[in-house]
Structure formats: structure tokens, C-alpha cells
Length: 238
Image 1 (cartoon, rainbow, N blue to C red):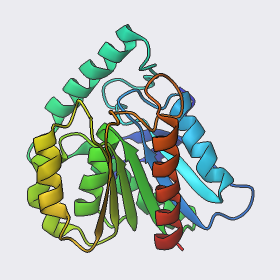
Image 2 (cartoon, helix red, strand yellow):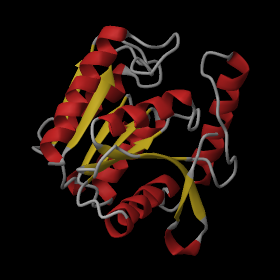
Image 3 (spheres, helix red, strand yellow):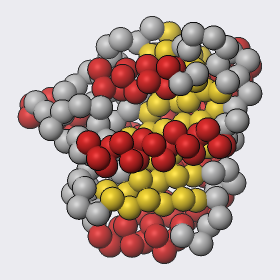
Image 4 (cartoon, rainbow, N blue to C red):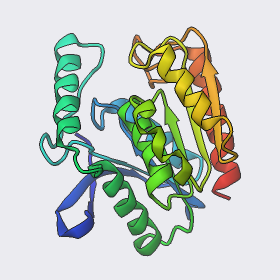
């Protein structure tokens, strides 16, 4: 895995491995990039590098560092896809009593970016499991703006929606085989009235449509979602 820095975890738990991409000059803000269940793979590195090219300090943490550090998987290889699903199951089973390790890690990274890197505003973008983390960061952290792509199990945490205080954007894949039509309807019912939340639907597109490369990517859908995300961060992290 191409991680190149570590950030202290909260509570002295250890150090979070992460990939960090820096812009050529002084960053005007920072963006935390939460990977899918495939780890900090070349696709996530590419996303960080793209944000750095736009003037952001971008950092992608290894979300499974506590039990499967350094995992780097290709979703187009079936055995690796199954390994990723197993890691997600192990991760989900480890969350208890309302705690989410990745939310804690995101807050730790945001604190580090502000205190140690001198960045005033911090955004977060997450994909798949990272999309759920983006939603939970909107309800549980002080990160300035959050974006989730095809987040999983968001409908199971809608009781937290009242706590959203900073801007949140969610990209919803209409044909997402990990998020049912009923789940998507519940998300709209709970979040459409919230002035802090923007929802975008992508009818007919499946989970992973905005992957940097590979079989899952839908070029038109990915470009549209990424343009919306870039405009969202430009507005809220200025």
C-alpha cells in the first residue's frame, strides 16, 4: 500500500497509516478521502492526486489498519473482491456501542490537519463504506463539508440526521445492488427536508460508478458526480 505518512489516532490508540498528496503551493483547504473496502489502492491514490492538483492537501487513511493493515485490493478480481467483503464484515462486527473507528480516525485527521498542517477548513469524501462514514462524519464530527458516494447502510443511521450541522452531499446510485429502492426512499424521506443536505440521484447506475478506473466506472455518471463534488467543496471550503 502506498501510504506515506501516519497520523496519531485518538486516545493514544496508535498511528493511522495514510496516503498524503500535497499541492505545489500552500493548500487552500484539505480533503480526507475515505476509501472503499478495497483499501488505499491505485484508484484512491489517483483521487488524492487529483485533489492535490486542484490545490487541496489530500489524505486517504487505511480504514482497516487495526486488523488488516496495508490491504490493497482490486475489485475486478473476484478473489480480492471477496476478501474485501470479508474485511467489511469484520469491520462492521467490530463497531459497537455507537462507536465507529473510522469516524474517530477522520476526526483525528481533521484535528491534525488544522493543528499541525495549518489548514483552516477540512472536507471529507468517501466511497461505498466510505460513503457511510461521510454521512456519520456529518452527524458526529466538526468536519466542514462531507460528500458520500453510494454509501451503504445509511438508512440504518437516519436517527442521527437531526445532528447534521455542516453541509453534506450524497450521490445515490439508482440501481445500487447494495442499497435497495426502499433504503433510498428512506434516505430521501429523512434528508430531503434538511437544508444542510443535498442529494443527487443517478438512475440506472450501479454501486461503484465513480471508481477511478475498472469495469464498474460509468464515465458520464462519474464526471457529473465529480463535477458536483468539486463545486460543493469549492463553495464550502473557501
